[in-house]
Length: 305
Ligand code: GDP
Image (cartoon, rainbow, N blue to C red):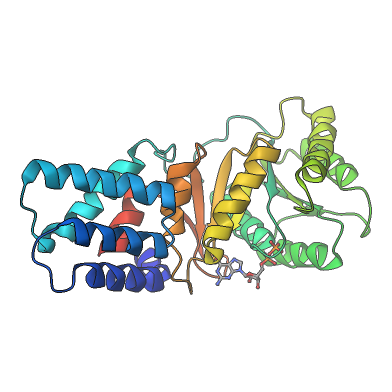
């Protein structure tokens, strides 16, 4: 909770100052306040669709209760944001200690370069290992030398083995090797790094489906999870990338990184609400301890505390 509050500090300040401005000089919630609030939420990266849903709910409440004091607005807003997220699929807070449904459990990690994919894999391996699980990394982002190097550094840092090949080798072959190696080592969980190159949708689909097919040669129902990593500090851009990736492949979980040091954390609300895919993890720093499991109630609570 503390690291969440700390990680969200800039987003919280941003949120608070925008809401304060929206009600400045007003004692009751009227149309003008609602307009200001709508603008405040949109500029706080909550996203148009989600903002409209929230504002409509508050409007209904104002219509029902006739008089709503602006001093109540914070708690009303918090309640309505919570309601908006009730149907979001992230109701189960992830637990690294829970037994994985199958062994090895294969997680394909996708996302555009620079969003924090490698770092997130490093943090995940740290958490899985701490929970007593045998982890294996696969360096299937073979397009950039730095990607393999960085993953190797993380494997050393967390003491988790890695399967890699020379730079430029076939990513599908690396993925195949990794899963085979996981079987023979008896690994519990496999994290495969991929090069998420978003040149165009067809290209991305093709690349990811090649990797999937080669993994399926070894384990027919793998990958068991496709985790899309998004950079929260890019705000609406992250929302856009989520749209593109979910259209190109079956994304089953989301991780949103770099929420520390950004005021754009409101985008988490937009992403959690708009996609029928659970946000499972959030990144609040560069260290291995800086990955938090996402809890929507805790998140909203933190925004308003
Ligand atoms: P990749 O290209 O997607 O694999 O991205 P990297 O994992 O190499 O991360 C890119 C940069 O973002 C690195 O400098 C990371 O240390 C940094 N980074 C990743 N996650 C976070 C985070 O949650 N918070 C902060 N502040 N930096 C992060």
